[in-house]
Image (cartoon, rainbow, N blue to C red):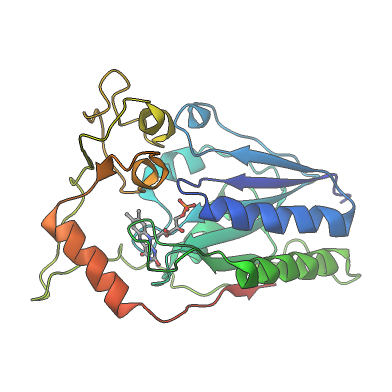
Length: 273
Ligand SMILES: Cc1cc2nc3c(=O)[nH]c(=O)nc-3n(C[C@H](O)[C@H](O)[C@H](O)COP(=O)(O)O)c2cc1C
């Protein structure tokens, strides 16, 4: 099958998944001499319509890792994708803890939707909750691995023995393990699902947080109020120009600090080609 286009497709609330996916897709396009198109499905309005691809596409498809898995708020949207036999490169971005079963889950979702996953990768980005964990990653070293990964994918797909129907093997368990469970100091489960960000007096009502919230959960008319669930992606906190959004829930803050202490080592990208 002749390939005609490379796609960079991603959900990325704080931009780390976006940077890795764009780096891979750009280099893949260069290596294969193909145009690159991007499709960012971070915003709820974009996810209102199902997305289809073509058999001539190569789709670099990225999501962040949430609780060791593909974000569950995206499952319904992903279930409506039409891969139409496009080649796919599933990519997950995690915050320096672990990606657990997210990559195998994304690979299997894409397969079910009609894609052919031929390579896959797990990369590291600054953790949404923190400015210490995976600080400022992906960095130059990560982007170099991403570009090298793309060069290897190009070589593989151009090879005489390339079999597009051979599913790429990745790390992870099947059946999938449960979502990662944060715990308190006594080992009891912490439930942060209902925790939402607060707004302080610095807010200038610029509305940016309401516009960028991937779940459309911040009320546009009054940005101090929530109108839906919060996935704790921290886009509103990290992108607020005046530092007006914050979390003060003790369980959330305990979990963040525990992660920072426990996972201070540098995790490295893993690629499967
Ligand atoms: C609710 C939540 C759960 C997360 N769970 C994990 C996890 O299990 N392992 C991990 O290493 N990072 C985890 N992260 C961190 C994200 O995977 C990481 O920050 C990612 O880079 C965010 O991608 P983005 O910048 O494209 O939004 C979690 C983030 C959030 C918001």
